[in-house]
View 1 (cartoon, rainbow, N blue to C red):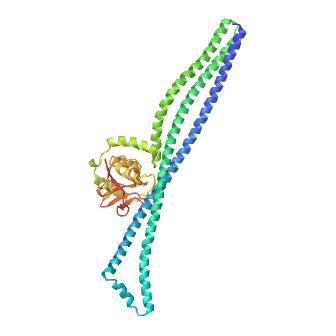
View 2: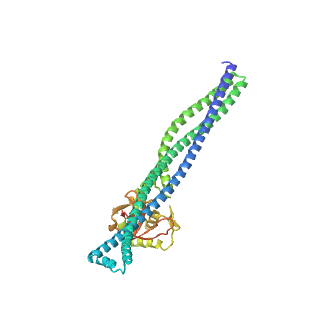
View 3: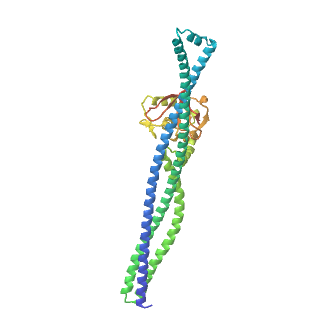
Length: 411
């Protein structure tokens, strides 16, 4: 091979390595841009998750308000019906003589007309009040039904967002693995390029053909090293991507669940459920049961909170502020029981009981089983301790005023 040919080959090798290096740099930059894009989507999704939890919390507060108002209206209607029934019985016992006597004892025609008007007005007022109360109850019931539907829809949205967050985390992990491979390729290409350039220069300046051949061999070896390194990294990356995807999906599910329960969680939500589910498995194994716990101490601890002026704070679980599930989790944590900060998730830690069978220390739930929206600690005598809603402090409530749907005894 002539010297000129050696020079052309060496120069071609160097040029090819330059092009490879430039491609690697462009690819790495493109991957970095994709990672930044995914990070932006993660931030946006997390913001939507937080907003979704706030919306769900407000809807759940409205559910509580409507449920309490329905119970109050029901009591008023029952009281009004009882009053009307009493009036009817009174009229029957006296053969309506008292009302007739009241009218016939009038001093004049105009007085008689006034007395008839009075009786009619009284009856009409009672019937109108009862009718208005029934209408109010139907209106509130319709409002609650609408709120229940909105809350269920919001839960589905929150679950979808949690799933999206997990998918984004997998995408980010895959891109990071790809970028790590590209960075390694780029560094190898840069090193090979420097070696090839040095060898090409040696070929050009070599006066001895033996030196030129050795220099060209060095350039070719550098180029081959880049190709082999790329293939090896591709194989390693494929395996790493698969492993990291699995591991990251698990980690992300746990992380997003912890963030949501500020809810939730919801979360709650799928991720909240994933996190709470794994927590319940470990907690159930090591958590004391109600039979081994002094329920009197639980009741005392719950009652002590009512004397501290602790405000309702959504997502709170401390003496500076707490919500309903935060209160129950806080109290039971003092006795070695780790409950998730989510009302529906806490159902998984109890065996269902009727409200009439509740014992001091049991949990009381409002709503349907599996999707309750409020929880409290039963203290006996038809009373419980709970964190009601925004604007109120932790206090004692009564089952006759705001009746729970079912009870739960710690397993």
